[in-house]
Length: 428
Image (tube, rainbow, N blue to C red; front, side, top):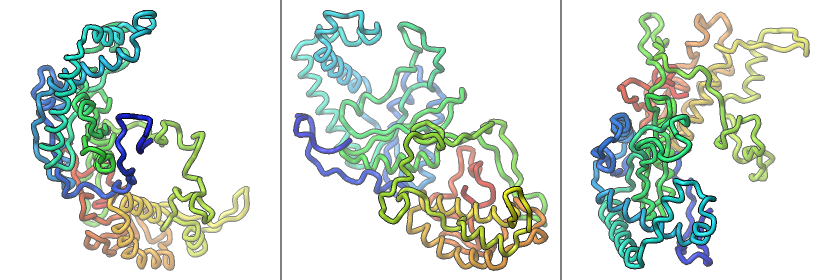
């Protein structure tokens, strides 16, 4: 929901942009301010939060952003200002109910709101003045120099449900979220998961943009979500093959923290096959298919049919006769290249993906014309039959192995290559 509302006196009449236009462009060259002072020196802050945030800052710098530490006005000023205005507004809305039906409120909520009955008009005016000063300081002095700011969203990792008592108080520091400064100033802010705490629960990184720059915030958030994903740090490591005769194979050492099961979920939290509404199937393009559906480039029905005709083995199944393919040598290369194309398009942009596709098509067509037979591949799942194909930002990289020039070779916090990589330079 966005846009000017004439019935809302606080609404501002500004154009509504395409918020998703910059998603997928990456963050190379952006100036980002790291508001580390907002949490690092706070008494009682979890060392784990500080460590995770510092690692996230290093990752953003590795993606090409210019990251510098910045100092915000005193957090206690934001907190006092925000708490006073919030409780005054809440009391104004719920005054009658607080007087007539106080037991309808939970004790925590009641105690936070009812204190506003003692506030004076002078208190509220002073809070409004302070809000104006803090807003100017944030937007003019910091966001006038930086494209966006980032900081933590909480002083401690999230608590498990069983750590919350039925009544007051909640767990220490768990409710000490650092969002109030941007509630006060009204700047657009986004929280994205950026790693796991030792308890296995995700922790959040908060991105703050200039006024009305939601598109910029989403652009940065998309890059962070892709690189600092919820699997960050859980995978093992890859090392070069100890066998010189098989240099393309990588040896994998498990970390012991890999997920036992990966379940595909939709953004709504439901299984992808059981969503009540699948908008990807909408035909909004007018050409007979859903415009949001991914159109395959390499792993197509025609490609599979071509392979079946050329190298498929005759087999008789209960459903009839067919031509079976070997997955590792004849189908898996198409899967890898299709995944690489999706990665390049989403993370590196349409232009990069189009150039990579153009460079790869000759080898792809040659593969379909002369696919490997089962005798050609000694190690089906670990060898790629294409080789010597150059793609943008790479040299002598086969399909699915293009090394992007814009941040695609980012290491994880330990300095090792991301654990999702199955082969050198390859992206899933």
